[in-house]
Image (cartoon, rainbow, N blue to C red):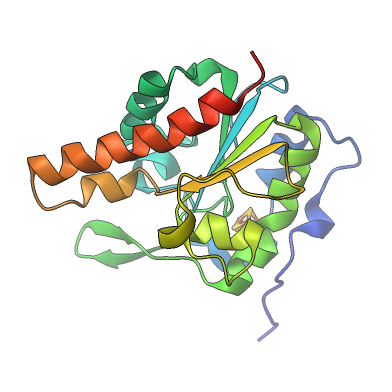
Length: 210
Ligand code: SF4
């Protein structure tokens, strides 16, 4: 049996525009995750977006739709952005891993956290997105995204909602993944998590140049 590749780099196009990257990513076979997923879910948004939000990987709905943050977590993201005064159409949204990783339980597909080697394999796509968009603010959603870009020693619980010292962008911050709001045990806990998420995004919004 031939070994699976573990690097998206050979699939990068010569032309580094968002449309060329998106088209090339659709055919990426840089790791094994494309096999079970429906399609590549590339980032969405305009090149001139001032804010880039990076999640972990597409979920079930995103895998079927072929677009990031269109499911329940996407609705939480939209609420947070609205509350912080960041227009969704001014934001570029993407994930560190572009294919849905899951396990099947009956008819359900249950999210599985990507492993470090899968994140590393896929990262060339995110690096290209960041180079093309050059966002003023980079917001990392959840521990997988934060660790992928800030290093494995980064502790989200200690530094969420802070403006971080990083060369990745003029403004860099990390917060929870909006799906964490949905996993809270009851309405009160969900409301509190929603407000804390919006507050983290407000810190970013306040730091943007007027
Ligand atoms: S997860 Fe990333 S590296 Fe792996 S096949 Fe999909 S796009 Fe390529």
